[in-house]
Image (cartoon, rainbow, N blue to C red; front, side, top):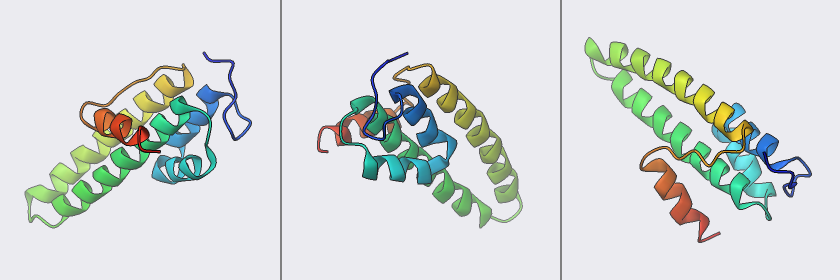
Length: 112
């Protein structure tokens, strides 16, 4: 775990975990507040991209008759599992990257 503090005054690993704990809203808040920690900004970006994407996909599948609600339910379970994995990894101070989404977050981090 990192002893460094983020711009919010919280230790980096706590701030990164909060990015996921409060879903994309937490990510947006830390993107607005954080100016110093690349670790926190990466997790904030990944949180926003992942949770917004999952919400959009969930809504799209919700409109498909018969099988759509089943797929949307499975996506909800997947999202819950990923949420736990992301919170735990961030709290442990790991740069856990979701395939594709982590790459996008990292490339966007260079532009901030």
